[in-house]
Amino acid sequence: MLDRAAELFESTGTLGNAQCVRFLCTDVTDLKPYQGPFDAAVFNDTLATEHDSAVAIRAATLLCRPGSTVVVSQRLDDPGTALPSMDVAEYIADLPLEAAAVAVDGKTMDGEGGVAAAKTASGARTEDCCGGSCWTFEVPPLYAMRNKVEMRAPVVSGFGRGSRQMGVPTANMDPAVLAAELSGMRRGVYFGFARLPDDTDQSAWEKCVINVGQRPTFADGDGVTIEVHVLKDFTRDFYGETMECVALGYLRPEMKFAGLSQLVGRIMTDIGLARNALDAECFTRAVVDGQNV
Ligand code: ADP
Ligand code: RBF
Ligand code: MG
Image (cartoon, rainbow, N blue to C red; front, side, top):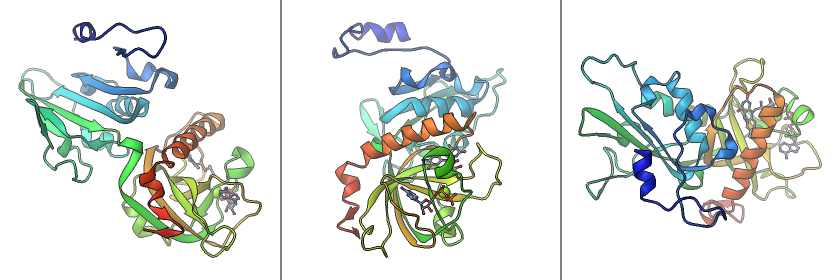
């Protein structure tokens, strides 16, 4: 199939500016981040038989750029074959994927729920002609969430590790105050804007990255923390002060890294992606002149 597809396109140019398509047929868990980002990933009858389906689709998704497509096509009920069970909805639950509008016979289908529906695996699913199923997902453009999440809570003490060991201080927002907001959030890394509304010098909205999770890289309990790293040099601590934060984009699930340097490396990538995305007008509009509109 890849050979046939490649015939439709010019071969890859060497200057990097020719219109071309690069195809790779590979074990996705062997790919390195520098080999991406990709415009599309297709699991053609392979996901259910991967050693770990959840790991495979996560690896593919994290290599796909915002606005790209992730397709899972799978025969599930072929008589005589014993395929392992596959729960696509569970695999994608904490990934930055939405049901995509699907083109069938030249017409754009909205799946079951329509493109405006909430993120669902069933909304992304269509039956194909040979007894299989096909799910078509999209990494949202700019990683934008359908619904922003607004949070307001005092800054509490964390584990004292953020700034000292990692160079990434994180203001921990009191999770007890934010139980309602937390219940609807995936465990993972978000970005948005944050501010200290009561501090006249710091009351402007600043870009931030937010980790909502249980820090699996460390063994310090599994309580959920909401940690906000503001992309600004503060000259002081602000424990006890009220922080306001609006989460606008979702980047990735929380992961267990092999060590501190791997985690910090990925956080630097998160910061770069966030800084870039947050320049978009759709995000800056969300916080105009200190008014959250
Ligand atoms: P803790 O483990 O107590 O959260 P950290 O090492 O993560 O400690 O440091 C977080 C504290 O650093 C915040 O509560 C805040 O008072 C301060 N701080 C200073 N600059 C920043 C920043 N740019 N982003 C977040 N917190 C900051
Ligand atoms: N901790 C993890 O164990 N896994 C992660 O994937 C992870 N991602 C993070 C992303 C960002 C942007 C930030 C600010 C923190 C992240 N953390 C993660 C939390 C980190 O472990 C925590 O800030 C420190 O341990 C200090 O408590
Ligand atoms: Mg912290």
